[in-house]
Length: 134
Image 1: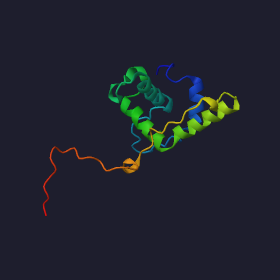
Image 2 (image 1 turned 90 degrees about the vertical axis):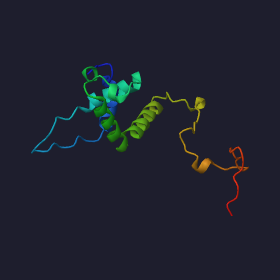
Image 3 (image 1 turned 120 degrees about the vertical axis):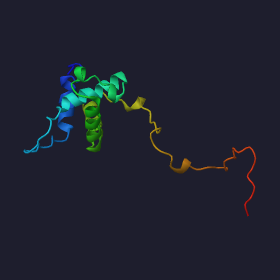
């Protein structure tokens, strides 16, 4: 694994937030699980380079892109990222480095259900209105 992908300071912040590693079966244990730090390196590699998950170089990162994607999915379902965000905001507030005077709120990630409120009906895009079938 490339050491620059997951620096020690970043790993120390993220490691306590990750869910516990599942216990291995005694009979037919299967493959060894890729360490979480290595899987995180795969996720960060995709974020930094923009390559597709299938194009992650396993020799460089230490795991396949599919493994990194699965671990990202598991961590997302476990709520790791909102907890990390809250922890980082708390740390910035304690250090008095969070200036809310220059912030912007963006609602582009919030869905407008059913297209929002319409003041006028939509115009038809058909070239000729359809004939009535009644």
